[in-house]
Length: 136
Picture 1: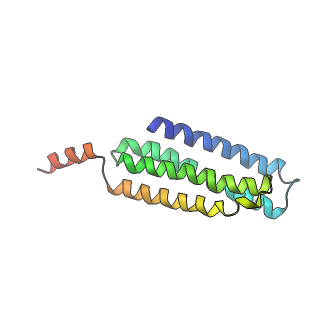
Picture 2: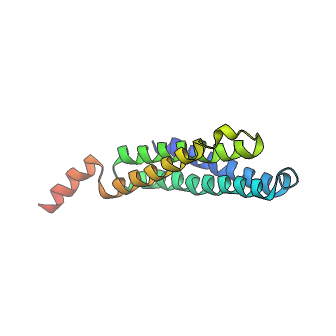
Picture 3: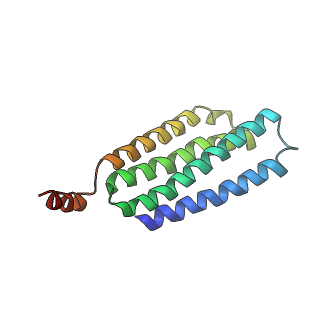
């Protein structure tokens, strides 16, 4: 689990940096200031959640509930694709139909954070056994 989450997080961070550089240097002449702001919002949320994916990969080694960590990673990935992806499409392709997709991506981000909270509260089942034996 850890390796693929780390890989996806790193790839999203890389493409976030690339998108940010494109927005700062190449896009400025092509779109309105509002379009640039919308694009930058997509980049910002992509980077935040790429870092969240890297954190999930690290946290998986701390004995947290893997099922909830996987769910958090899945929702963060879906959020990046839906939220940031729809903002990129709105600006670059002028696809107005993507507008309703953006809040769904935002909801995915929120659900991902809720899953991470639950993972922090719950322990991985094999760690529960160790915790129970040390408490006795």
